Image (cartoon, rainbow, N blue to C red; front, side, top):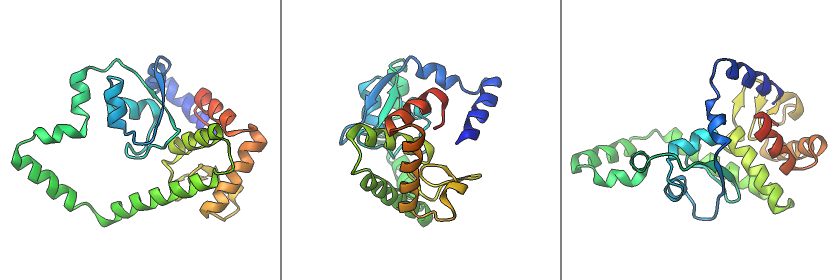
Amino acid sequence: MRIKKFLLTIAAAFGLITVSAVAANADTVTVKSGDTLSKIATEYNTTVSSIQQLNHLADVNLIYVGEQLQVNGNETQSNQANNQPQAAVQQPAASNNQTKQTQNTQPAAQSAQTTQATANNNASLSSSSNLSSSDAAAKAWIVARESGGNYNARNGQYVGAYQLSASYLGGDYSPAHQDEVANQYVTSRYGSWVNAQKHWQECGWY
């Protein structure tokens, strides 16, 4: 987690974090039940791709109730249409058949990964049941950006849904242990998940 600050500094030197400049002028939207990125993009006259870049989302299909997303209204309507799934309806029949064939041949491993990510997210939400609604939302926000809710995510020495240093986990990478250690870490360092989110938004890590 601390190494991310160093990496962001390097990225800034090469002009690779222009998305942050856009995010500074963005609106903040709290995800409600039934929301999708396509729906949010339509409401705010922007695109799925723009929202994904602004919020560093690993998977555009994984957003959570209570999560806060940054959006802007500067995208054109024509660009928005190009990013919405409904555009596929206007394709010729031959193109639709090709799309269906591609979907049907999707590797089983990818489907299993999606199922696992959903299960991991449910586990994370259940572990947040003793938190306030604002802390639970902040926790979900951080998890979405760190790993997309994947308890099996690895990035060098950082492990799991919260991207904790492996040394913190002591070799126990189970979801329950990750939840426990993450709560302890955030409480001792920031006092709350809300404060941890504020630090993440300012520095790009927590």
